[in-house]
Every structure is written in C-alpha cells, then in structure tokens.
Length: 396
Image (cartoon, rainbow, N blue to C red; front, side):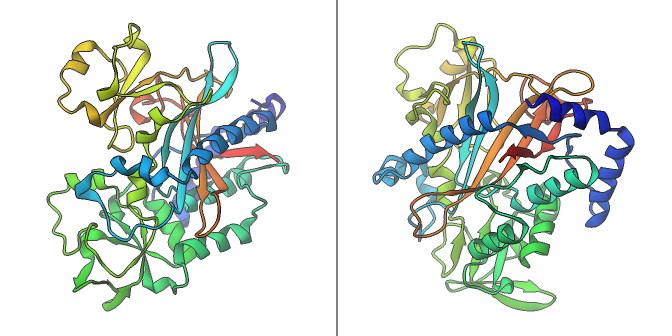
C-alpha cells in the first residue's frame, strides 16, 4: 500500500535473512514457534489508517452506549455467565479485512470483534524483530497513542497486574505449554512476571484460589484470563477443582463475560459502510437470492471454527438452533501487499485497553495476518510463502 517502502523492503529481503530472523526468535526463549511467521510486516499509510480508525470509532460509539449491557445480555449463554462482572471490558480486539468495495475502493471491512485479550507480548516483540532484521521507516510505528517501549510495558503492567504483585496474578489457560500462543505467554512472563497456569492446576478452597509455584502454594488475587469457553467445554478429559462460573474472591483482568458480549453477536446490530450486512438466522425473513455471497457463522465459536463459506439452502434448513447462527455478506479481500511472487491479502487487528473508570478504550498496538488463499488461515495457505502472522507499521 506504500509502494516506495514496499520496494525498499523487498529489495533488501533475502531468504537467508528470513531464516536468521526465525532462528533468532526460536532461540531467544528456547522455544520453536509453532505457527508461520510471515516474511514481512504490513506498511499502512495515513489515509488508510484513518479509515480504520474511523471504523473503530463507530464501533466504540456503540460499545459505550448507556444501554449496551441490556442490548448484549442475550449474548451470554446462561450456563456460562461468570459472577462479578465489571462495568466494561478491559480488552478489545477489532479485526478488519483489507477489501475492495463495489465501487472499486480499498476500504477496511469488519471481520470480527472480541472483548478478549490478544497477543500483547508477542506483537510488540515481533515488531522489534522486523526492525532488527529487516526494515521499517522511523515515521511508521506498531504502537499507538504516543506509546513507546517503556510506556507500553508500564500500561500493560498497570492493567494486567492491577495493584497486585506479579506472583499473585496468573495468566489462566488450558494446558498453556501446548497452546500455539505459548510464545506470547513466555514473553508476557518476561515483561510482567506473570506465570501461565493451567486451569486444571488451580486449587480452590472455599471461595479462594491458589496455584503452586516451585513447590509453594500461592494465593491467586487476579486472573489474566486467556481461557476460551468454547475450547474448555470440549475438554471433558480435564479434571477441574475450579469452574469459571464459581463465585470466587478474585479479580478478573478481562472478565470472561465480555468474550460473549463483544463478539460476532454484535455484527447484525452494527451499521456502517465498514461493516458487512449481517443477520441473525432466526430473524431472517427471506433467504437471500444470492446466498453464494454469504457466509454462515456460529455465534458462539472461536478462531473460525464452524464457519461455512459456501452456504446452501440445505445448510440453513438443517440448522436446529438458528438463534445461535448469523448470516454475513462475504467481503472481497484485495491482494494489496506485493511479494516477490503473487500478491498477498491482508487482515489487521486493532488492539485496545479500556482502563477502569475511563470513558472509552485506548488503541495501543496491532496485529496483521497475511494470506494468498481464499481466506485468512493456515488451511488456506499450505505450502505458500509470504503468509502467516505479522504486524502493521502505521504512518504517524
């Protein structure tokens, strides 16, 4: 999207440099990164950045409505409602595809939104490695809101640790050592001192929680929650002493209810040129004649599971619980990043922190994903290069 910067980056890129880049990251934490890291960051010019920010501001205006909790109440499955919910989410992630609209104009289109933390540690680390091994102009940055290295880490500490010492705060996950995102947990521990703990290792006594660290039982005062209910419900093999819905004396850094309140559930309620038409399936009066231009999404799933990209009327007829599905108009990803071979499609994620007692979320960092396939995702990009996880450098 910025031809002169792209030309310079591609001219200095070599496969040897890329291998060194990967080797460096794999060695630093003695952990081979299990997902594909793209050969390049994404350079976003100010004009397109402003469109993304405009789209985000429209969504945030909806999230900050006085009646938002009432609007989103049905988004939380009753059996997954966690006690002691706070006033608003601590974390917000908004995903956009870089798309071409019907008028041929390049615009962001909302793909998904989440009231849930993302890879705050890894994305900051990755941006530094792109600068170290390759190139990014000084007037382009991966951070926002005038943050720098020191103030970014300070902001994360303030909001993830709260007023607690790091040993009393845990990053809660399901078998964190087996998660693809483990690299983020390792970086988070280095940055903040917070250890990743499996939910099955939590000890519950009355309404208090504990974990074991180096043979010592430590009380848990605050949880940086990374557990996805969708995944947890499938893990019937786990023996749990603590259930997420238990009423316990613990603070949540990212209360679990916001994962549902701010999710795909909102998309049919949001109206903007940056948001594709979306409908709750149970409220759909007429099936669109151009059904091939829509995707079918379960409302309560994570990471793309259960999505049907080639929808038929038979698919819709077979759904027994239409209140749990939405039909969304397809967006046309435009290949805007020029690689040494075929052009690349881009998806960006804007990551916010919404501090307690503040009027709205603060944009702090971003993610990017690159694809040459039909959609973004590993299964669409097998045996391809210049695809995978990345980060955006945005013009200041």
